[in-house]
Image (cartoon, rainbow, N blue to C red; front, side):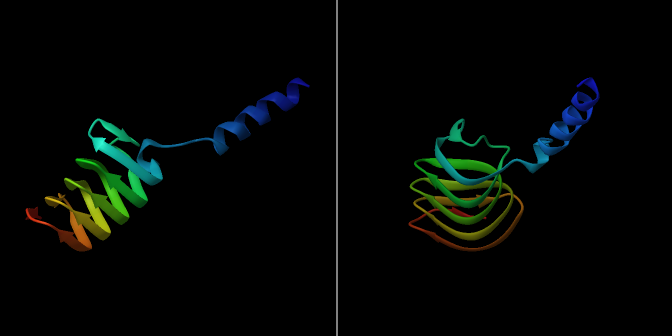
Length: 103
C-alpha cells in the first residue's frame, strides 16, 4: 500500500500544478476593481462584463462595460463601452464607445 502512495501523490501534484501566470477565465463579471471575478491578475478569454469598469491582465474576446475597459497587457477582440477603452499594451480590436478616451 505504501509503495502506491508516493507515485499517487506525485501524479496528483503534476495534474493539479497551476502557475500564477496561467490564470485564465472564460468569463469575467466586474463592478469596479477590486469587486470583480476573477481578480485583476487573471487573463480573460471569452467575455468580460463590467458595470463601472474592469481591470485584467490580458483580454481576448468580447468586452462590454457601462463605464470603461482597462487591460494591463494586451487586448484582442471587440470592446463596447460608455466612456473609455484603455489598454497599456498591444491592441488588436474594434472599439465602440459613447464618448471618451481610447488608447
